[in-house]
Structure formats: structure tokens, C-alpha cells
Length: 270
Length: 304
Image 1 (cartoon, rainbow over the protein chains, first blue to last red):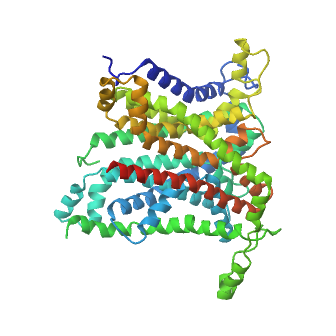
Image 2: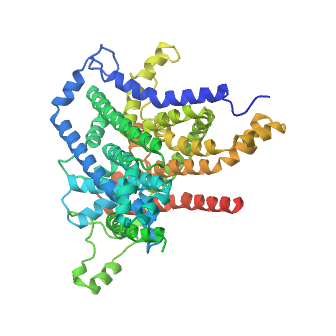
């Protein structure tokens, strides 16, 4: 009798088609970024001219720089706050307002970005804050710390608590036990959380559009306004650079999580 | 006192900073949206009447509440444009979620049937596009779908069509873009439940003489319902509020609510109406959330 658990031809086909669907457009985009022709659709041989064009485009470079700064700053703040939130949720047992706290942490994950962006802008206007780098950073931190909290919390949940308890039996106070035992064990999850926050911030268009001021556009905002005017080969090059950057980030993040799983529950020092 | 209890107290202190942050940058802004949705439009900077002035004390709060008006909501209900935008958003979201389920299920099923070592790789391959900027992925489709784009070139070369087909700025392009962007959100929760499923259950059904389609429909599918629910919700909610994909890929004659809100805010600068639209959008999204929660509770009760 045929075993059902075996891969059928249908399973393989749907998997292959699905992955092709996911990757083909990106591969085409990357290939065409090296196209020498000014016409996006006509192949004119390999060339780096659109990359050169990008590096000569001051406005684009400034936007890219702004995006990078916002992403690093917001990912760093979000990692600290998100980790604290995860510790409170998974180790704090009950505290007053816990339900509201976890509700606030999960709500931004499903909230449409237009609403989050709109409400933050109204806050900044009411506070009379000058919009630019800091308002975008704060907005991105608010969104991404929720993702960090989820990633770190799942790692904390799978951690053996007796390790912390053993440290305290041996005379550590709770804070020391956390710093010297728990923190090294969840470090890979924290790194993965930072990477996720970084790419989410780098990627965000909607919330940044609402919370930024004149003269401080992020890269997605610039790309978006260019794309609305039509396809330009230079955009292909910028997109390929962003894809390359994110690919590097993914490799680091997956190395970190591999480290975390091979380390397992053993308290090997980092 | 157990070590666990001792640990709990400092852990609670860890909540303080993120708690304050979320209260200030998530909760308070919502109060603002609500307040502004109930105020009059003003031609000024900012383009709405000021929030209440707390320095004037209780009297100011009373007058502020006295000035609340439901006019913006009345406008939303009375103007066809808005009602149409809501209906279209929900229709688009339902249609694309259904397509996502149809496409995503076989892929997740195939992943769950792979040998263990390959499953991890397949999972990474599905997640990677999710990490890649969504704007770039939409832009990649514009490249392909435009008038002299790759798709038309291929179709012309294969003699499937004799002149270029208009793909861009159509609903087909929009659905394609949405399905493409949200596919990982559908596959991952489906895969998570399918991979955890006990293969012995399917084997038992098949040993007892059920043909494959019956095994699937009577055993596999019902057991994967939690994953279906999570996937549907993960896709449906953000699609309703979607702005960028319809804006770049769909035609401009029929807008979704996310676009309407955006236009009202940035182009018409009518912040109160935009705020009201946001509140109604939230209300629309509360329905599937509550349904999902009830479904989950019922499953928990049945599980006992």
C-alpha cells in the first residue's frame, strides 16, 4: 500500500511552482539592474552604469543614508525595549495591567500601517515636535519593538528555568542571574530580533510617510515617488543594492539562530 | 520563597520602560485619532481645531466635549465614495484571501511532506522574500507587467497574443501583487499546523479504506483549521487597509479605504475625515478578530 506521508508528484510540483513564483520576479529585477540599455525592457548587455548613476544621485544617497540611520537607531532602541517587554511577559508572572500591556504589544502587529502612521502623526503634531529623523525613529521603534518582543519571548519560553534557579541557589541575585545566565542564552534571539527590526524599518514606507517632515525622506519614500512616475533603470540598481544588504542581514541572522539551536539548553559561554 | 518567585519581581520592573513607551506612542495617539475624528475641519496648520487646552482646567474639558460632533461620521455614511471604498476593501480582501488559501495550502502541504532536513531549507526559502522589501517586490512586478514588459514579450514570442495586453493598472495586476506579497503570511501558519500533525491519523484513515480525497477532506483539513484561521486572519486584516499595492498596480477609478484615507489626509488635508475613516476601518477589522477569537475558544472547548 502507498504511504500517504511520502511526497507525491503533486506535492513536489506545487512546492516548485510556489518557490518559482516567489523568486522569479526578484531574479528578473536583479538581472535587469545590470542592463546597459536605457530602455528597461531591451537587453543591451551587462553594465554597471545604473549603479554609477545611483552613486551620483545626491537626493537618493541622502535618502539611503537617512534610512540607514533610522534603521540602526530604531532597531537598537526597539531591541532594548522589546527584550525588556519579553522578560516582563515571560518571567514577570502577574503584574498590574499585564493584559493591557500584552494587548498593546500585539496590536501593532496586525494594525494596518495607515492607522498607526496617522495616529502617531497626530501625536507629534499635538506635541509640536519637529518632524524628521527622530519622529520616524520613534514611530519605527514603536512598531518593531513588538516584533522583537515576540521573537525574544519565544526563545525565553523554550529556555529551561532551572538554569536561572540554579544560579540563584548558588548565590546570584535575580539581576545577576539574568545577566550572566539568561542573557547569553537568549543572545541569538536578541540578535535575530535586531535584524528583523532593522529590515522592517528599512522597508517601511507608509509609517515613514506620515511621520517624516519635509526634506527628510527615507529611501522607500523616494523610491515610491520615482516608481509612481514610471520605471527607471536606476531604481533597479537601488533595489538590487537593498536586496543585497538584506541578504547579508539574513545570513547573519540565520547564523545567529543556528548558533542558538546548536547551543541548545547547555550553558556554553559565548 | 522559591527562586521563581524571587525572579518575578525584578522582571516586573522590566515592564516599566516598554510599558510607558507603548502607552505614550500607541495608546495616547489613538485617543487623539478618536478626538480629532469628532472635531471640525479648520483651514489652518494643523488642519483641525486644537485639542483641549488642559491649562484652562475642567471648564475647557467640558466645552471640548460639548464641541464634539459626529459630522465626519455622517459624511462617511452619506457619501457613496466612502461606502464604496469600504465595500471594495472588504471584497478585495476576501477574494485575495481565498486565492491565497487555495495557492498557499498545497505549498504548505508539500513543505510538511518533505524530509525533515529539507523542511528547514524550504522554510528559509519561503521567509526570505518576506524579509525583502515589499516595495521592491511590487516594483519587480511593475517591471514585468508593463506594456513592453517581460510578460508581454514572452506572450508575443509564443504567439499567445498578437498585440501587447494591458496588465498594469488593472484589478488582475492588483490581485497578483497582493497574492505575491502575502503568500508567506499564508504559508507559514499553515505549514506550522500541517508539520505538527500526526501522520498516523492519515495512515489510519487510509488503512480503513478512505480514498485520498476523503482522507484529506475528513482528516487533514479539519485538523489544519487552526492554521487556516491564523493564515486567513494574518492576510485579511492588512489587505483591508492596504495602500501601496492598489495604488501602484490597480487602476485609479476605484479606491480602497487605505487609499481613501491617504488621499483625504495628504491631498485634501481633511484630517478629521481621515481620522473618522481610520476609526471605521478599525471597527470593520474588529469583526473578523472577534470571530476568530470565538472560533478559537470553541475549538479549545471541543478539545476537552
